[in-house]
Length: 68
Image (cartoon, one colour):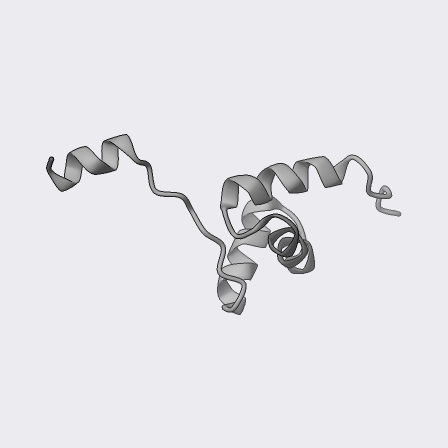
């Protein structure tokens, strides 16, 4: 099987590497959360972006609203 066929059958998982500040910053902007939230989510569910996304969605409903 060719490399292209392998990619079609097994999609690459996006990973969040919290050892690089610039990566954490980029993912924080992507998820629209703080860098601390990204690091906490990675610590809780691992470094797969899909799992972090789901964790952050669940966590947003229980957060206190921001004051104006």
